[in-house]
Image (tube, rainbow, N blue to C red; front, side, top):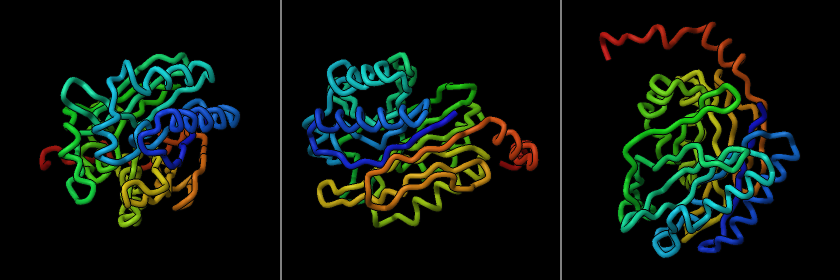
Length: 261
């Protein structure tokens, strides 16, 4: 299966402009033969807490129906970070729409950033469960940005959800670009899984994002990578045979000492 990751900037509070970019990159991915495209975090609003608080919508009224329309029209599955307002609460969420335009999975970010100026606690409520979905015989586990720092989350997706492709939609700041590279590789290697990272570029509210979107294979090799500062579409073939080969050669899951941890 060919999978794509869209490294984009966003227009703060401008849903139509951001949807236009989702449509354009999804079309490019489809033309390249991709069955799935992954977008970064909060692409409907941009990543600014005041803007999100003002523009976040219930899924029935915001970006979600438009993303469904795009996916169905192009016959491509889409994963995207979007806002989600539910009553008085706002969630930093991830949407999965299949090639028929149906919502097949959702995830609400469970680990909220606390470091200034990106303290999410005043804007978002945390989610309380993990999520995965099946596509083309593979199991794909969802995560958002800061979640990448928590190895327990990806391990639970790999063990309990049987995920062998880990997806991360991100708005990771330039200040910690080296952390992003290292963590992405580590999560792929330790779980013997593909990792698909779609990160932002551009600057929102004075915070510049570091790009470096990547597709990492289960051995930890980067099979597609983007720059630190340009909008780009990256893509690569992913294969269950590669996953099985890596796991059969080094049976790390079977060698865990569950009597000790």
